[in-house]
Length: 447
Image 1 (cartoon, rainbow, N blue to C red):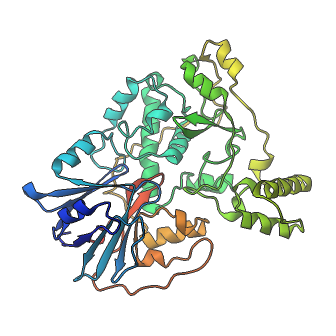
Image 2: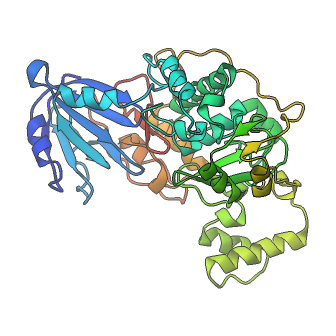
Image 3: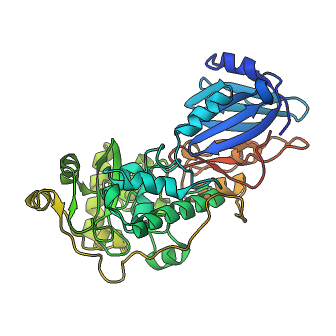
């Protein structure tokens, strides 16, 4: 903090902003959900830079001279005294005064990773809305920062169906949703990865449920039911409808019935946001390279398009019999059909969760990050993701430094390690998955 920078916009998409930031001291940083705000200068002359990384943005803090800018590099900040250069690429980079910050802040709901988050504001929004809770959790003006993976995992842990209308939820169900949101985002803050399965349960469930419960899985590790997926506002929603039943008598809007009627089993894919390690991937999740390696290991032909390779490997696996993977061998059930919904006039009658699967109330937890300890460094977080099979192109670390860049990628290889200049701080603002920002260390950013 307090450092001044020269500023240029290599791709000319932030030229006016770079001019406004020129040689002004960095005085403050705020994170609200998926939005990052840098404050340069003070008083009437303060300039606020608003950043939203999207899915692939980056803010690299590197030793001089630094790399050549890319086509997507919108801003370069340089401090010769510290020997640092900062390269920013992001979906949104805007600048203005305090009115910009106040206007953007006013449109955002409470952020579970901020100390000032007020759960009652979200509760009032939920109580007054007929929208499904799965949609509300993705509305940034309702709650700031949750993305699709966290939505799926939070609702599963809370035992709440994604289509449950907000105004039909009781306070206990809401409290479970809010507390799990805080706890999971805090875990992501500490680890730099989306790890939603509790460690003791991960040991019990085993592969492939060691990192996530329902996202991109075919079956529920707890009960064996099929994980069903359908569309909600152009995003895929995931649910185990045995562990997450709709409340008896729930009236579901006609358009949501139509969406649910198209629900089917999960079509697994190689997730860029939350990938499985190679040994946990199904044929459909594998890359062509991994498919060919697996086929070659079985002395099978390796030619053809990806869909042909997948079919060949799946056929060989089926012929070989059960492999021990619960997700592949568990009997699955479909719990809601279009006919069942229509016969009730959109009123859904479902049984309570089976014994042993009733959701427990998590402990009360304070939002924010100030009290968290044992926070991974950016380098340790990058190593964890690499060991889990996540490639460098999808590592989703928004602020990188010299140390994270030299971490070997999941596909192998290592870049040369530049020297770390005297006084350089670690890059510590990590991007939360699905575009979310998290303060990835108890240190300030390297500026």
